[in-house]
Length: 203
Image (cartoon, rainbow, N blue to C red):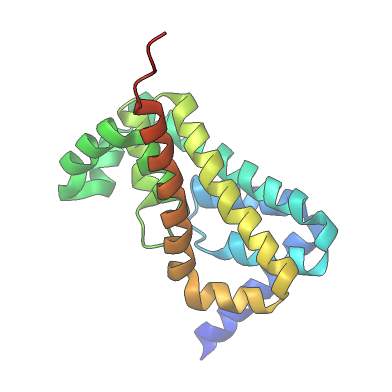
Protein backbone atom coordinates (compact mmCIF):
# COMPACT_ATOMS: atom_id res chain seq x y z
CA UNK A 1 0.00 0.00 0.00
CA UNK A 2 2.77 2.42 0.99
CA UNK A 3 4.74 1.44 -2.11
CA UNK A 4 1.74 2.22 -4.35
CA UNK A 5 1.31 5.59 -2.66
CA UNK A 6 5.01 6.35 -3.15
CA UNK A 7 4.80 5.45 -6.84
CA UNK A 8 1.68 7.61 -7.19
CA UNK A 9 3.41 10.59 -5.56
CA UNK A 10 6.52 10.21 -7.73
CA UNK A 11 4.39 10.04 -10.87
CA UNK A 12 2.51 13.24 -9.99
CA UNK A 13 5.78 14.99 -9.16
CA UNK A 14 7.28 13.95 -12.50
CA UNK A 15 4.08 14.90 -14.32
CA UNK A 16 4.12 18.37 -12.76
CA UNK A 17 7.83 18.86 -13.52
CA UNK A 18 7.44 17.93 -17.19
CA UNK A 19 4.26 20.00 -17.51
CA UNK A 20 6.19 23.04 -16.25
CA UNK A 21 9.15 22.49 -18.59
CA UNK A 22 7.10 21.28 -21.60
CA UNK A 23 9.13 20.06 -24.56
CA UNK A 24 12.46 20.31 -22.73
CA UNK A 25 11.14 18.00 -20.03
CA UNK A 26 10.02 15.48 -22.63
CA UNK A 27 13.44 15.71 -24.29
CA UNK A 28 15.20 14.98 -20.99
CA UNK A 29 12.94 12.05 -20.03
CA UNK A 30 13.30 10.48 -23.48
CA UNK A 31 17.06 11.04 -23.45
CA UNK A 32 17.48 9.38 -20.04
CA UNK A 33 15.21 6.48 -20.96
CA UNK A 34 17.19 5.78 -24.14
CA UNK A 35 20.63 6.11 -22.56
CA UNK A 36 21.25 5.53 -18.85
CA UNK A 37 18.04 5.33 -16.79
CA UNK A 38 15.23 2.96 -17.88
CA UNK A 39 11.88 4.79 -17.69
CA UNK A 40 9.61 2.46 -19.68
CA UNK A 41 6.40 4.01 -21.06
CA UNK A 42 6.76 7.16 -18.91
CA UNK A 43 7.78 9.38 -21.84
CA UNK A 44 4.80 8.05 -23.82
CA UNK A 45 2.33 8.81 -21.04
CA UNK A 46 3.75 12.29 -20.44
CA UNK A 47 3.59 13.07 -24.16
CA UNK A 48 -0.07 12.06 -24.25
CA UNK A 49 -0.74 14.08 -21.12
CA UNK A 50 0.73 17.30 -22.53
CA UNK A 51 -0.68 16.84 -26.04
CA UNK A 52 -4.21 16.25 -24.74
CA UNK A 53 -3.99 19.55 -22.85
CA UNK A 54 -2.50 21.57 -25.71
CA UNK A 55 -3.39 20.21 -29.14
CA UNK A 56 -1.52 22.87 -31.12
CA UNK A 57 1.80 22.04 -29.45
CA UNK A 58 1.54 18.31 -30.11
CA UNK A 59 3.99 18.32 -33.09
CA UNK A 60 6.53 20.14 -30.90
CA UNK A 61 6.09 17.67 -28.04
CA UNK A 62 6.38 14.68 -30.37
CA UNK A 63 9.45 16.17 -32.05
CA UNK A 64 11.20 16.81 -28.71
CA UNK A 65 10.44 13.28 -27.51
CA UNK A 66 11.82 11.88 -30.77
CA UNK A 67 14.91 14.09 -30.60
CA UNK A 68 15.61 13.17 -26.97
CA UNK A 69 15.27 9.45 -27.67
CA UNK A 70 17.49 9.54 -30.76
CA UNK A 71 20.13 11.65 -28.96
CA UNK A 72 20.21 9.25 -26.01
CA UNK A 73 20.53 6.25 -28.31
CA UNK A 74 23.35 7.87 -30.30
CA UNK A 75 25.25 8.53 -27.06
CA UNK A 76 24.85 4.90 -26.00
CA UNK A 77 25.83 3.82 -29.52
CA UNK A 78 29.12 5.77 -29.34
CA UNK A 79 29.93 4.53 -25.85
CA UNK A 80 29.41 0.96 -27.03
CA UNK A 81 31.48 1.59 -30.14
CA UNK A 82 34.40 2.83 -28.01
CA UNK A 83 34.54 -0.28 -25.86
CA UNK A 84 31.16 -1.75 -25.05
CA UNK A 85 31.72 -5.36 -26.09
CA UNK A 86 31.91 -6.52 -22.46
CA UNK A 87 28.76 -4.50 -21.67
CA UNK A 88 27.00 -6.08 -24.63
CA UNK A 89 27.86 -9.62 -23.52
CA UNK A 90 26.71 -8.75 -20.00
CA UNK A 91 23.28 -7.64 -21.25
CA UNK A 92 22.89 -10.23 -24.00
CA UNK A 93 24.17 -13.27 -22.08
CA UNK A 94 23.78 -16.52 -24.00
CA UNK A 95 22.03 -14.70 -26.85
CA UNK A 96 25.14 -12.64 -27.72
CA UNK A 97 26.12 -14.75 -30.74
CA UNK A 98 22.58 -14.67 -32.18
CA UNK A 99 22.34 -10.90 -31.68
CA UNK A 100 25.72 -10.46 -33.36
CA UNK A 101 24.79 -12.39 -36.48
CA UNK A 102 21.32 -10.86 -36.75
CA UNK A 103 22.49 -7.25 -36.32
CA UNK A 104 25.26 -7.70 -38.90
CA UNK A 105 22.79 -9.01 -41.50
CA UNK A 106 19.69 -6.97 -40.62
CA UNK A 107 20.89 -3.88 -38.75
CA UNK A 108 18.45 -1.29 -40.08
CA UNK A 109 15.35 -3.46 -39.69
CA UNK A 110 16.48 -4.70 -36.26
CA UNK A 111 16.89 -1.21 -34.83
CA UNK A 112 13.60 -0.04 -36.32
CA UNK A 113 11.66 -2.99 -34.89
CA UNK A 114 13.30 -2.68 -31.47
CA UNK A 115 12.49 1.04 -31.33
CA UNK A 116 8.83 0.36 -32.11
CA UNK A 117 8.11 -2.51 -29.73
CA UNK A 118 7.33 -1.89 -26.03
CA UNK A 119 9.12 -3.50 -23.04
CA UNK A 120 10.24 -6.21 -22.42
CA UNK A 121 11.85 -5.83 -25.86
CA UNK A 122 15.62 -5.60 -25.08
CA UNK A 123 16.03 -2.29 -26.89
CA UNK A 124 19.27 -1.17 -25.18
CA UNK A 125 20.91 -4.48 -26.09
CA UNK A 126 20.18 -3.76 -29.75
CA UNK A 127 21.58 -0.23 -29.48
CA UNK A 128 24.75 -1.49 -27.77
CA UNK A 129 25.10 -4.26 -30.36
CA UNK A 130 24.77 -1.74 -33.19
CA UNK A 131 27.65 0.26 -31.70
CA UNK A 132 29.85 -2.72 -30.89
CA UNK A 133 29.47 -4.21 -34.37
CA UNK A 134 29.93 -0.78 -36.00
CA UNK A 135 26.62 -0.43 -37.77
CA UNK A 136 26.77 2.65 -40.08
CA UNK A 137 25.65 5.69 -38.09
CA UNK A 138 23.44 6.96 -40.92
CA UNK A 139 21.48 3.70 -41.05
CA UNK A 140 21.24 3.60 -37.25
CA UNK A 141 19.90 7.15 -36.95
CA UNK A 142 17.55 6.74 -39.93
CA UNK A 143 15.96 3.62 -38.42
CA UNK A 144 15.56 5.36 -35.07
CA UNK A 145 14.05 8.49 -36.58
CA UNK A 146 11.48 6.52 -38.55
CA UNK A 147 10.48 4.32 -35.61
CA UNK A 148 10.40 6.99 -32.91
CA UNK A 149 8.58 9.48 -35.15
CA UNK A 150 5.87 6.92 -35.91
CA UNK A 151 5.59 6.11 -32.21
CA UNK A 152 5.52 9.60 -30.74
CA UNK A 153 3.54 11.38 -33.46
CA UNK A 154 1.07 8.46 -33.40
CA UNK A 155 0.64 8.85 -29.66
CA UNK A 156 0.21 12.59 -30.09
CA UNK A 157 -2.53 11.99 -32.62
CA UNK A 158 -4.29 9.64 -30.19
CA UNK A 159 -4.02 12.29 -27.47
CA UNK A 160 -5.64 14.93 -29.69
CA UNK A 161 -8.37 12.55 -30.82
CA UNK A 162 -9.21 10.78 -27.55
CA UNK A 163 -7.77 12.98 -24.81
CA UNK A 164 -7.03 11.31 -21.49
CA UNK A 165 -8.59 8.06 -22.71
CA UNK A 166 -5.60 7.61 -25.02
CA UNK A 167 -3.39 7.15 -21.96
CA UNK A 168 -5.52 4.29 -20.62
CA UNK A 169 -5.78 2.73 -24.06
CA UNK A 170 -2.00 2.82 -24.42
CA UNK A 171 -1.51 1.13 -21.07
CA UNK A 172 -4.00 -1.63 -21.86
CA UNK A 173 -3.17 -2.20 -25.54
CA UNK A 174 0.45 -1.10 -26.00
CA UNK A 175 1.50 -4.47 -27.41
CA UNK A 176 -1.39 -4.56 -29.92
CA UNK A 177 -0.66 -1.00 -31.08
CA UNK A 178 3.02 -1.80 -31.50
CA UNK A 179 2.31 -4.95 -33.47
CA UNK A 180 -0.10 -3.16 -35.82
CA UNK A 181 2.41 -0.37 -36.38
CA UNK A 182 5.16 -2.92 -36.86
CA UNK A 183 3.08 -4.76 -39.45
CA UNK A 184 2.56 -1.57 -41.46
CA UNK A 185 6.26 -0.68 -41.29
CA UNK A 186 7.34 -4.17 -42.34
CA UNK A 187 4.92 -4.14 -45.25
CA UNK A 188 6.31 -0.81 -46.45
CA UNK A 189 9.88 -2.01 -45.95
CA UNK A 190 9.31 -5.20 -47.94
CA UNK A 191 7.53 -3.29 -50.69
CA UNK A 192 10.45 -0.89 -51.02
CA UNK A 193 12.95 -3.77 -51.08
CA UNK A 194 10.96 -5.53 -53.81
CA UNK A 195 10.76 -2.35 -55.91
CA UNK A 196 14.49 -1.69 -55.54
CA UNK A 197 15.37 -5.27 -56.49
CA UNK A 198 13.39 -5.22 -59.74
CA UNK A 199 15.74 -5.31 -62.73
CA UNK A 200 15.83 -2.08 -64.69
CA UNK A 201 14.50 -2.33 -68.26
CA UNK A 202 17.18 -2.42 -70.91
CA UNK A 203 17.67 0.84 -72.71
